[in-house]
Length: 130
Length: 350
Image (cartoon, rainbow over the protein chains, first blue to last red):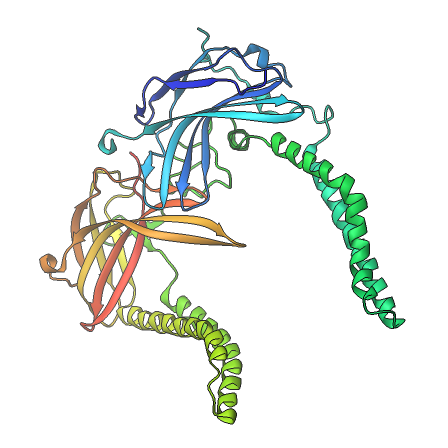
């Protein structure tokens, strides 16, 4: 396989309340490409804006060729991740807080490591801020 | 359809792969760079010695730069020609082998636990693994009139004044030697050298700005000394969005503060790297009046009721990005001198 794999990551809903649950599914069309080193799925918040990026991971799972877990990767795969109460999504002037689910696939091709990253953004906020 | 809802303890996936199985590309790239650097340095030292020898032996002038540059160029041509492509390959491999940011953050604090890319912020009175690791609770003391006495935030005016005076003396002291030379030159020749003036202008402006900042800080230091210790206390702390509370403000100085106003202020802070230094930008994004001098009379002590806005963002404290709430007290001493103080408090998510 020479092209990047087609990766899809979809969420059941884009707006979530604190302590809610993020549900969705991801699929790597045709399965992980030959030479796949890892498939990583995470749910995280990250900041953007003027400051250096901060990141917080609330859920992380990896399937790797090195440790043999890649063979057990369910494809397609569904997930339901409990969300924490904070930090809330925020769209400020200098500081912005984003929530997202992220799928990262790394594979080797002709001796070089390549990767594809698929993000699905959602908001985490109480009703008063929605 | 497969489902990974079960909390499968996939902790092995977080562990790095067997280091003995493949060489560490990061270490290999570092080692290669070090070899290249040391070799080039050695070649340059040889070139310097050769150039010095040519000079001492009174060799031809064209040989000096050739002797100086030659060994370094030869090294790059012979060794670098083979080594640099390998280094580039190793660097690419090192980048590819770098753990993803999510993986690094997860490893830092364990799967399923909120983790930052840097040290976790201090959260007073909270344990690790708390539900709100990014909500730093501001320190308070027991109050006299209300339950919680807030602590002032920011650098005291006296410290600012002292630092700015030292900076002004240092900057303008050095600058003065150049200015004196230029002025003496004018006096001797009777001509203004516009090039020198143009070159010195930005430095003079910076020097004047530091002096102005020192004067401003000095004025505020005098005012805060006259006003004395101002305290702000809250009935409840931390406060959730929409929560009601009372604030009490009092002072202990000899000059009474007039036209006192109290505000709730939300400020964003972003720390970023600019060149080789870190800078922090601040911006006030919300300012809600709590006590208006027209309504309260503007004298101290005062007690006022307020409510945190229902749509307020909670306090947020990450290594490089912050959202901070303060109680701001403003007023005038002797009727004209402006006074301002900020006291930190926490807006909690619930």
